Length: 207
Image 1 (tube, rainbow, N blue to C red):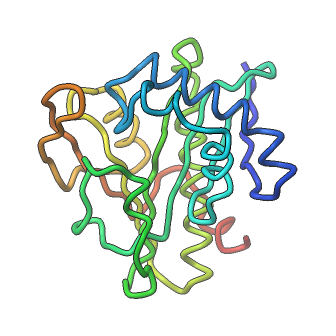
Image 2 (spheres, helix red, strand yellow):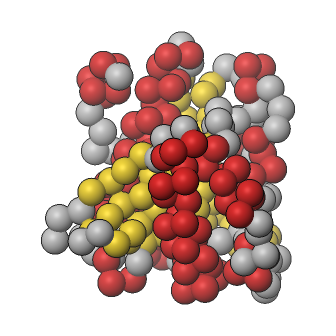
């Protein structure tokens, strides 16, 4: 079944156009698969409308939505550039807290994939891989514009082989493992990617 991927612009009209769909899908993700996120449904259902708006307006975060038959079926955001190297970051820390600091002090352009979720009925169609590729392509273009080497990371629970397998197909490899105690004890993995698979580098250079 065909799908369309939309990068949400940060202008006021675009944010207001997509914010309710983004909010509803994010809350659905937290309810459907609570162990996959570093946040909880109880926490985010209490967010104000202004908080949801500011998430999409944040100049350091770019959000993508995948639509199928007019319905949101997948989302991902990419945050950066970050003020730390992948090896200096933590997979268990709230990703929204790692945006502070000065990214100009780093020699790499480091980006973090966050909020990745695909509706269960839409899995197995290549949508997740395609939306991750879009996010990485965007970040690679930003890195090229800054004249820096690109690198991306993503945090995932170790006991989630489907997600780990997906990220490996996208070019990620595990570099850090550490305890993660949200809701229950578990292990968080930080996966790193410098050369994404399935992305035409020439198209990045043209952007």
